Image (cartoon, rainbow, N blue to C red; front, top):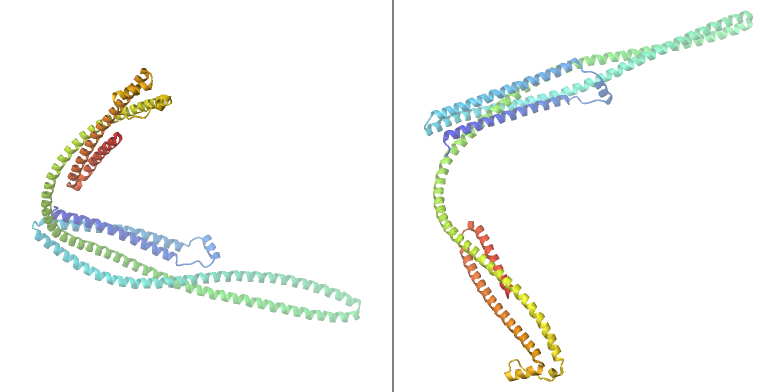
Length: 516
């Protein structure tokens, strides 16, 4: 039976291993939580257009974004190193507490004092566990509130980012349109200048032609003067239209410039708002990280205290149960040993009888096999004799048929076998020559003697086979009655002996049947 010190040492070792497993699992959960947060922050900015995505792929990262990524990586590395240090410190504290508990238990020799110290330690741990549970509930509520604030801030940030991307796209489109309009204005101005120069050249040429013609002809001069005035009026109207068109284009360009300035001002405001929101989000992230760390630490401590409490309860229950079970087991073992000794003695006696029976059966089997071999040899001899007799019988039949075919035999009446000497002599004289009669008598005597021998041999074999089968059946019945009284543990060995006895009896019966 294990002592209480050994039980306590085992309990403390189990406690330390469980605490290490809990620390490892909490570390893994915290890392997974950080990965999920990173994925969420990266997935907040959805793609707006395929063109924008291609532009962003081609566009290199801003230095601010690179700094943010580097800061995040360094923060994660520092957090992982801090978590490893905290895990090591917790493991050291657990080992220290287990050592202190072992020292306190080993210092007291009395069992009651050990139980009292364990109860005191258990009460302290229970009070601390309740206090930690209250703190944990408060921190949980606070964490939920901060999580809601964080989610709302994330949604606002996603909205601001989407607005920012939309405004940037609008600004780019307006800048492109402004450039296009300016280029069109320059192109139109150049074309109008060329047209004006061409018109002025044409106008001068026409004036020179008119002057020359006016000098040539005065009548025609008046008409040409009128034509010139009409042309001047048309040219003035054309110039006025051109000036109006230029004014219209200038007004359109000014309106586009004003719109651009307005969008730029809105962009600046939006950037300021986004910067403020980013600062808020970073502060909230820091608070959430701190709260998650506190929550993880509290959970670890709570799990450690719960495990300690469970182990103390288990050790107390086991120590009480072990005393009772040990007593019951000792009583049961004494009873079982007595029963087993009795059964062992009875089994030994049965085994001795079984061994004797098996030896007798083996000897009997050897004897039976010898008798079967002898019977088989006799059977072979008898078969050979039967074949020889059948051959002789066929020869005699032929002779009898040949004799019957003679007229003396056909006229002679049939007589019984048991006849007097005179009648036999008369029959022999009727058969023919004395040589033929001698041969016939010798053959008949030999056949009769052979048949008598065969009958005697068969009767002897049949009697011996019946005696052996009766003896084997009696032995088999006695042996089966003894086997039925044995236990289930001896049935396997008895089965093999029964199979042997059955095989021998079957061989005997087979041999006797063959002999019959």
